[in-house]
Length: 303
Image 1 (cartoon, helix red, strand yellow):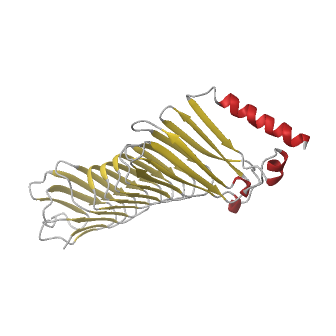
Image 2 (spheres, rainbow, N blue to C red; image 1 turned 90 degrees about the vertical axis):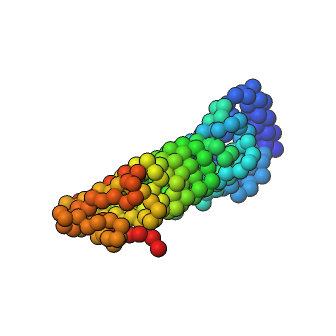
């Protein structure tokens, strides 16, 4: 009983001290076991496998997430001036550290036991943020999913995929193996990967740069007038679907592969053969450059 009282007094002292730090809020959840909760006089509930935090913010906050564990990061927007975080995990081998400094929210998932098995290192994060929010997200193998967020964002993953829906801003995506699916995205997009592919669907992007060493690239949408579009794959397929109402200047070239022109009615076949195509649709207002070292470049007109 004396141990429980000492634990309760320590907890009250911690809460009292935290009240003197109004500008920086920090929370560390080391995911203690049930025995530790009992020793502190608190009930042993779920061993800290589920955590919810609420951070009040002003306009256009910045959210930084570093998830060294395996798990999904999901970000959606709301009309509220707050960042809500829901963290969950499968074991006590992971701890979450959360910190607020003004309108910046930092969330980090730390590995507490270096000998833990991969199945014990699964941690997922669900966030609700204001519509205008800047994002810096980094994970190892889990999916990054962002929907209806307006703001610059940098998204990094080693082996996980990145799915974006109805986002806008300056979008930077970096992966090693993970692929990108960007649906109804607006603004500027910069994607680089070793073996991951990229699909850009129904975009309203004014500047696109897609590069992958061995993955495939698909661009299916309209080219914004005066927009710049560069798509390169070392040995993967580069495929573009365009509209008859588009206006763009096209250059497509491959060293060892072929250029498959399936829109000859709009794009005059190049006299240099199947490895190069230079043509113009409409007034040629947008600039489109496609290249692959040994892969196929395919160009089609949508029905």
